[in-house]
Length: 223
Image (cartoon, rainbow, N blue to C red; front, side, top):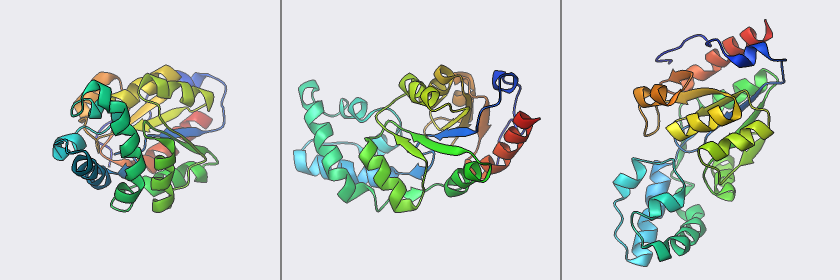
């Protein structure tokens, strides 16, 4: 259900030549509730390394790159090794417990139903992102990993995305860099007020409202 902006706002994209529809999605807490899996992977890393990690705190702020989070728990000279090990153990601990968020499959399908391309642009290690999507039966056209915030904008621009859907203020910044419309969902760590303040064009409670919003956006773009 949409919490605000039921109709697409005026946006510069409408006044430029119409391009084929391409929609980008973030992964963690946008398409996938990866909190159970990430928690399990951090618990395994903590047990293996002997480093105490507040897993509840970790999963409350999912979004930024792995190394940013690990720097809160490991000394600077140990972060790289901890990140490598986390990514190695991730498939065995994090894929099975994670679930698709409400509306995720339907939102990707809605892009396809309109003749568009759905891409995933995420800060997650790309092979692990692909494992999540395959496990959940979500099949985007392209997956691009290891990009955060403004860096996501480069991939979005390269793929010609008109819309980027995410749950974090970093996702809003990425959309801005790409000149894409920012659609934000409040299923992640950032609330509606934070997302609007960051510059989100549209804020939805979750992805269940996205297919209807997208249909209106595409109809307006075609007008």
